[in-house]
Image (tube, rainbow, N blue to C red; front, side):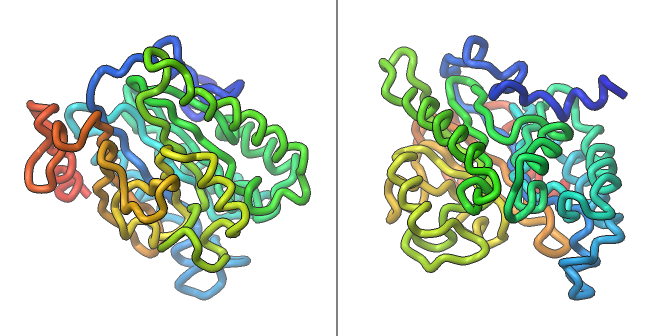
Length: 319
């Protein structure tokens, strides 16, 4: 049991075991990863019955969708470098009746992931509560690993953030301050010399900075404008990937917060499909390149990755 649990607890001490800077700091060429979001075991029936606040007593459909996504991912060649789940892992809020069973069944559903594909977890509002506390954050970390941390893959720095600390940290201000200090240290790495700086920085969080444009009204599915603008200024050229709402999938490219008018990045391309019963599991393939013209064109498969780079067609078929 301890060995099985270990695949869910690789994020410790603000880093990720096996994907550290000393091992993965060099750019070695294009690679891809899988992004999924909001498996949210327990939501589908609750949504249909209009009882999202207290519902969630069945989650067989979500388990089947998750297993289907895992089976499809395992068949991809070459393997993705990792799979990230961008929050709302389960529907039951902390301390509610179905929480433990939903977490148990999600882990069971994900346990079939090929051992060569690390699982990266991002905390969402259903994982921590809309207003997180030190207790709910600690509970999450005991089940899924750190709530914020960094890791490296092929010269690219990935930052996993706790977006609930941006949204409402009124019950845990010290945790918010700690993440802010840590984040500033991580972002400073972009100023390193060219030989040691990451090729890209990609941010994973649950709540999107914005849905349609950077100055849109505040709402449940985005961060408040004041918070959002500060993060845009700090992230600069970092790419931001989120979950929380299917609207964030419409663009099918990474947000580039340093340039709100931009619809994406020329060096990082996300092409996605939604396979969902209802707002449930979104699965995308993200291809990280040096320059788009050398690795991806919409009408062709990546030139820089010969052999079997058929992720888009394969996912459509397998899912």
